[in-house]
Length: 271
Image (tube, rainbow, N blue to C red; front, side, top):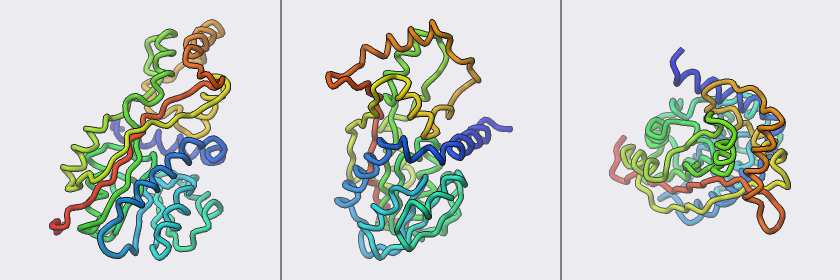
């Protein structure tokens, strides 16, 4: 099995397992959807909008935001995890939705079949060049992709604290904004707007933060090897290191290095 295929299986398994707990812990994910909706409102596609892709829809929170902004559009709700898709119908009140279980790096969509694409906190698990090329292929000329993904400073507090415990890679590193923009340009997409303001998960203690990360399925993606549970001494070291980040309001933060992009397909593209 190739490393890429192993990674894909790991992603699917992690988010299938998290489907039942995702909505209870996804406060940051909901905030990001609202931020992405604000960006989308200021960067509409040219012409009418009849078909939109939600690429990596998860349990479907973003679908109502998309439907509210584009009430006449049909939405393709795509996710790689079948258990996530199974929750879409019960979570969304939008009526014109077609669930689709597929890979963001191999979209089963015809060229130029989309007026817009929305993707909130899904593409960070993908190869930027592959996934953006697929989205660009499916967009019509003048169509827009609204992307929320994560940068390399995501969960930096956790990475710094774990460095006091061992040398293992406990936190996956994501691509910086310049990498995403370069991949977009190569795919024929031009960045017309961006926002790099971070988002924060908050909890009263470290156990609460880690519990929420586990509940949304992101805890095991990108691990290089199976690790034994932390012993008591290591846990105390981890807690003490993380405690230095406690905010004046008493909460412990976990930073999400958020990258918001509006990418327009060139009008002259005859893909």
